[in-house]
Length: 115
Image 1 (cartoon, rainbow, N blue to C red):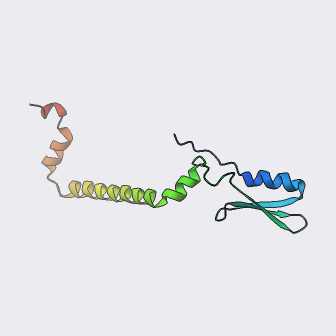
Image 2 (spheres, one colour):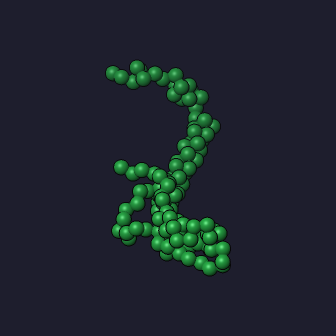
């Protein structure tokens, strides 16, 4: 079962243990899988963000969106296209259909369809 929760960054804990109050700022370097800290003396230190490289971390909303953005965009595009097509069909049917046929569509009951 997928649980969407914020990932705990191991690198933050490592850097806090190393330097404590001497850290000015920290940032996550996702491409290298590390956390980088700027220290108050101007030096920079980094720590790995994973305990083990093969560790499977739980999914987060951000990670799902980063991995599946193409699929989600395609689904949204198809839904928008279907909405436009159905709206255009309804407008076209309302403008060009025979008034008697429209009356029949709106007053037909499901009981009349059964034999």
